[in-house]
Length: 595
Image 1: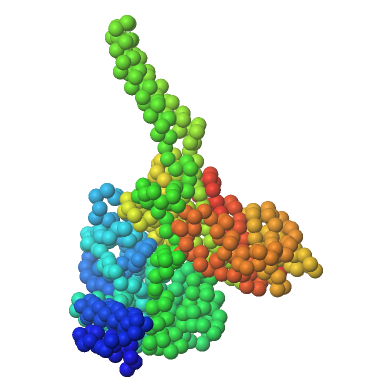
Image 2: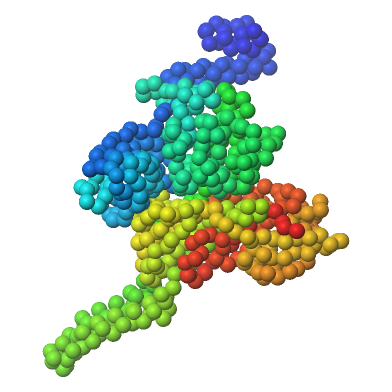
């Protein structure tokens, strides 16, 4: 034992050592303080045990039978940290005729009247497992299952919310425990992890929305037993910013995940996200999982964080609305209403005194009609019937497979609500999490249709967007001596960009869509990390804060053959099909240049 440790032990035991020099006295005091702090920490650890193990939050099931249809639904399953929680419903058709089944969920919140639904066709003697994504702000509600000619099935569903780290596991709890060497928590002991298991890989969800809601998805089952359409959903999840952990990596993993390439590290960048492979099971795999799950202040839980009305009441200057026209002209309307009140009140009294009651009976309705016409004229001539929007996005181009992975943010405002918006199956619309009323009707049948509530009349709304869609956009670049020939085929005007090619960093000039130009070598101060600087220039602090969960991959330095471009216009998000007047836009696109 060292002398400092011996002295600290003597102090703790109350024994007085021999007189010492001043320097030795200071060392004794420091050692005593350290020992006391260690003793306090140990006592606190004994009083408050550290979380350990994991909780199985798969939930419980309940069954109903109506005629030839037997339904098994799940409730109190794990709620993810953002996006959507989901219930899986097993539909068994025991008869000889096909059944058309409608699933509809309505929250048990008095102020919310919207519905989430999905329609499923179940063939004769067929078993179908379907999933229904539900916004996490709808923490309880009634699921109604309807079949023509049968009494509806109605039951209450709710998720289970926890404070521990949460993940979805494709595989059994046994395979999970053996892979990461974490035991199941017993009784009411706090756990460090909470997991939702899907033991039958054939029943795994095909919806990107369900995976996107989890920070980490783990595959602990046999990869070869996972259906191709589930692999496609996991590929879309990883390329749009998810963290996929595979505990049983197999040869030829790139056949399932086309962007994956073996490297020196277990964590491989994958588009906007990453893929983690555990070569050794046990503590090493456990550490890789915890690293993937850990929170980073610069990387929040969600990829994109649209905000509702409530944050604008705070004094945070970055959380202002992204649309300058995101409010009704209350001041002008107040002047019109005040003028009407004066004319209909004191004005009517003066008119009655001078002209009698008959002119008052004519004047008051006339003034009311003129006031209403003035308000309508203002709405038509100034606000119009257009939808106003501001759009910001990050897009990763996968040129070899002609697709684009996009994480974006849209701010919306309309004088009149637009028509329902129909989107591809690989698109997820993320609503704000602050208020359950800031949502919309959603139909997940054959993709996503967002109906009433998407942009209510005269109401500011923000929606996040995660999508993987086919795309042939590209940036064509070819080095010619000391110059770089560049063609903009990104489908939007290019405002600023950089290319790393031939061992040099090139600055791309502003180009219209389809235009060609000449790039020049970048200046020396720009050669450090142009991608990081471009993210800060393209987005305002408020936009960066909302998209900070997706910007990490874009801030990495450009590799050989890569480009990053800042473009304008409505952007590559699928919701751009909705006609709207663009009030602000900035889109960053990253990928490999095409020769």
